[in-house]
Length: 211
Image (cartoon, rainbow, N blue to C red; front, side):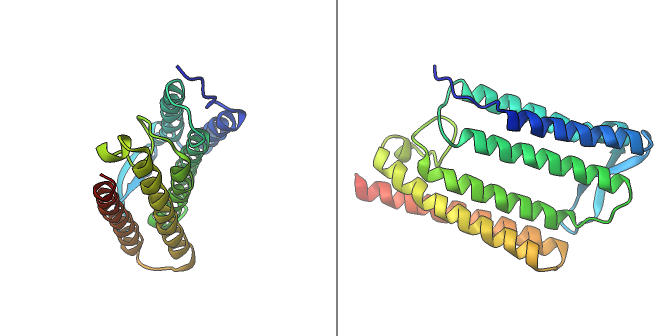
């Protein structure tokens, strides 16, 4: 069993920041007021919870995912695990901040913020895909990549660059252009689907030529 250190001071600091934002929310908001927790593709609020429950979403999200990555770290070893953990916990901070600000009446373009965040996440994932080795958790895990180290390496190198490209395009598009909320999600979904299809076809053809 490997001992990959995942729980760092940075991760605990991120958990603390998430909880502090929640604490501020408990001080500033009426605990029974309805707070937006979900937005549709048009950027409209379609679900609300009482503040006392909504403010638990960010900390719960952070703690659950920290536990998951910590468990993975006892079984897997890879340079990708700590930065990916940090990125997911950063999303928890963003989620909690959105809930708090929305509860205070701030007008936020949530689809735009989500597109930027997911784009940055894809960049982080893409950066570490080429550095990964065959494992049970991370990477482009097809039967033919797991059974052939060369196919794994070339597939994840290609996938890494592709995901970074998609992530950068989505993040920059959302950061620079002010368009209808549905357009942000359309660009993000189209980019991710294109990446999955193209990477899968590339990897399969690569395995055929290597056999």
